[in-house]
Length: 325
Image (cartoon, rainbow, N blue to C red):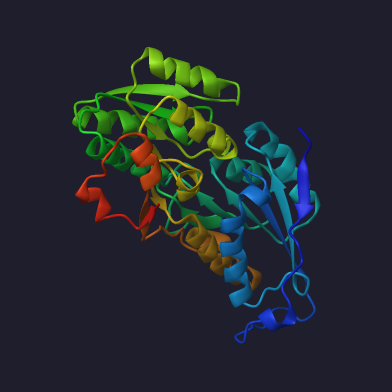
């Protein structure tokens, strides 16, 4: 697969220059690296969140900011090469999404600041949220903790549910704890749990064949570069097999998925801009506490529910952040 490496478009007009522009180093053009799981065109909402935050802090592409975007296109094995490329470009800071990308950058550099959006708790990447240390800080996305909540939502949606499947990539080091959380939540609800391990695009079809054989009657989809990259294929396979499924972000629901419970990722990216600004102004990343999200969203696709013959219970309707007709 051809490597995706390109500069995010220069586009903000002078009129977009914020009133509260900070005093960055005069004449300096900051070079921001981004190491992502999916191509920029598939990541538009999150990137716009980051751009918006940066603009409000006085960083305008084409004036004092240049973005170098690199995507592994759902292939985690490409992260080390892409991380090394960003290091060779001597970017001022690297924004990462996910554990594999973050670890690849930390292995490539101990000096370039890293701002992460990733899922694990303390110890997986940083020793402490309060003092992460080294050249890294950022935000976590609570993917592990939210696994249990997604199982609960699925059971609430389908009271007759008996066997739940977790569709996820177990080669991602952040995922095994998520599987343990899923099994624990399933047992607490009297459910059996089935792991549908997908490590490549070719595994997707086989995973759904396994789901049929094991009589899985509800699905939780995990957040990983592979699942993000093949979002539409997963949604189509779920529909074809008439499975109720809970997804890890709203973009799956916008693509036709049934329901998602997750952090608001564009807001996460918007908040990452504050870390970038502080570091550009001289703060040490290891002294900036890792932040946690405070708001979560429940998004429901009513059209998909109707196609599955499901009635969304009032208890979910009243908690929904948004319903897609």
